[in-house]
Length: 80
Image (cartoon, rainbow, N blue to C red; front, side):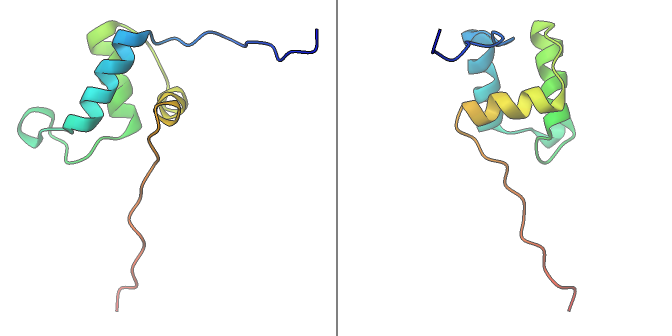
């Protein structure tokens, strides 16, 4: 009993993870999606529409981190 507990199983299966990666790599289309960049809530909504899997923003962020993605934000610039 010295090992670490496996924890809760992931909600997404391999096909759903591949669809998430494809959506992130492809990026949103402004004409279709009305967005210029993906937000976590948009990705969660897309997963719900396509696979009927309900995830919150934190869970989507956790899945993307496991897949090797990092959250990138623009460096703030002084107005002058």
